[in-house]
Length: 230
Image (cartoon, rainbow, N blue to C red; front, side, top):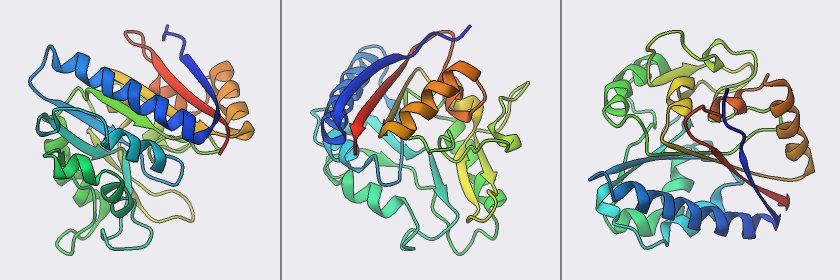
C-alpha cells in the first residue's frame, strides 16, 4: 500500500510556496550528501510561480542540478501558451548560477509530439529515478499532463517510456513525464490552493481514482503543501 501523504496547510499561496521551496531545497541537499548530481522536475502553470521564484533563490550547488518540466504544451518556447518562458524567468537565479535546463519545447525540426517525446525519452531516462518531482494539480485531479480517463495516466505493467505524448480533448497536444516516472521518483511534492482543490484531493485519496494519486508510493511519502487562498 502507498504511504499516506504528509500534509502541510497554510493560509495563503505565498506562505505555502515559501515553505515548499525550503522543504524542496532541504530535500535536495540531503540527496546530494549521497549523490553527485540531482534531477528535479518542476511544474508550470499559474499556481507554482511563487514557489519557483522562491526555490531559485535557495542556497544550493546549482551546477550539480538538472531542472526539467513535468510537462509542456507542444508549442514553441516563445508561444504565449508555453510554460517554459515563465518557468525560465522564475528560475533565472538558479539557471544563472549553473543549473542545467532540459527543454520540452517544440522546435521546427520536430513534426509531432510523438517524435519529440521519443527524442526526449533517452535524455530523461538517463536522469532516472528523478531526485524530486513537484507537481501542481488541476480541478479534475490531473497532474503534469496526465488527465483522468487518458490511457497515459495509468501505471505501466512493465517498463514504459519516460516521456509520453498526450492529446487532451479540446486542448493542444502535450508532452508529459510518464506515470511510472512520477511514481518512482525518490521524493515527491504537490502544491495547490483553494477549497475546491482541497476537496478534489481529499476525494482522490478516498477513491484512488484520479491521476494525482500516481504521486503516492510505497517507499516514500508525498509532501502536500496546500493553501486556503490563492
